[in-house]
Image (cartoon, rainbow, N blue to C red; front, side, top):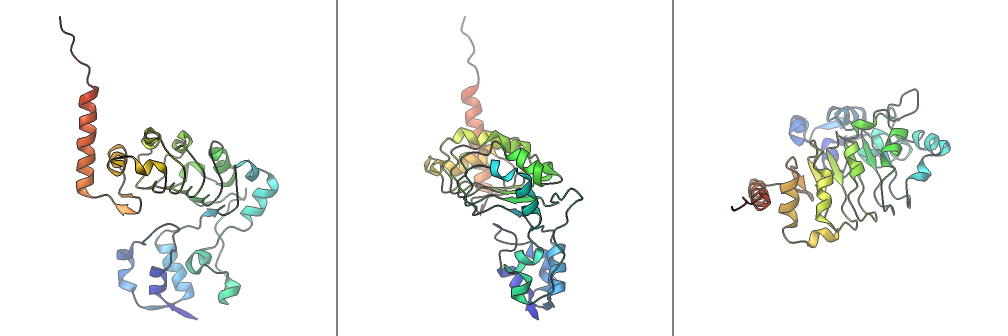
Length: 249
């Protein structure tokens, strides 16, 4: 069975991403490739299957700490094929690719975690949960917390210094000052916050961009040069107002 490489371009093979480094694959665009070669392409772009806890009706993360739950989840980690086609190998009648690599401790070597579409109102135990499931917890690079019930941006996110992509749209975040909890994440390049009450605050987009200088994409829209410069001007004005006044003699 053959599929064109265009199939890969059109599917959401990296959850939440709108595109997949197409320039690196330009030379094979529109060629026909058998499934095994497509999986090689998938490996070539560096995508790894995420550990997926979405749509579980989770109200907290405590239920994920039992040994039975950990063993069950690590035994059914997503395969690369699941992400490529959104189907199991039985459905597509294709040979099953190798599963996501796991260590002798049965922990995942993935760097991605999906907790979206649940009922979470806090993630205070997230570092412990990630440590329980991931071999290298500090390497977490992609985290989806969208469509939950969180009212704040937790400082616990700073426990993941290599976080590059963070989705928090569709929550209940209200305080713009919470953005400060993301400032230490110096590798963060993509962030979503739309669908939160915070979105209604005047100058919402420029304010966030001004605080998080490493962002290249915000709310699924690229950060423009004009927005970056406007953010810099905003921060300069804030610094001026914070300068202590000289005491008059």
